[in-house]
Length: 213
Image: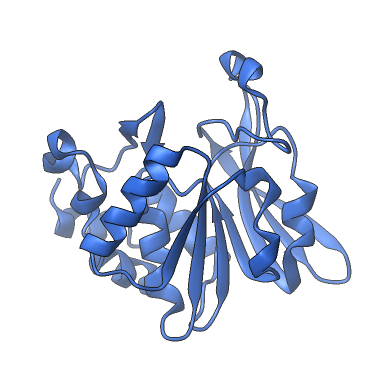
């Protein structure tokens, strides 16, 4: 599949603004050299250290659910190679910023390099435990979590602005994608079944638990 075919396949379930943003982000720049020829296959691909870059359709779905707008302050948990953050960065321009937290130092450094090479300037990559969020830049208009948690992490909920939205997968063997909205408390809406790598951290799974996922 080439880029044009991929973008066409997203029509009907992804918002046009999301498809437009994805058209401006070169996915091949966020993949290992040996996988760049598969950049526009609609499938997750390995990026090292047991992690993956999400399938393009899942990036499109999550961005559409979040309804990202220019000027928004966004937190991404599970920065990976930086691709998802780059797409969100396009959607919140001008004036918006994405803070991408990645727990694996090697991947965080690679994401910084990938984003710089792609010319993305409104993303900051931080090496930290994403399950705790990033309180120093909170509150956030939107939070996107790219790894499944055993339950909705309380620190992430508390770092949402009033009116803010968070999309995240939750579960072990069976995972569901949820939309959390903060407005006079919190509402939680199930969206669909998904498969993600586990969120490792203080408010996520522990290293010793990951073999059950």
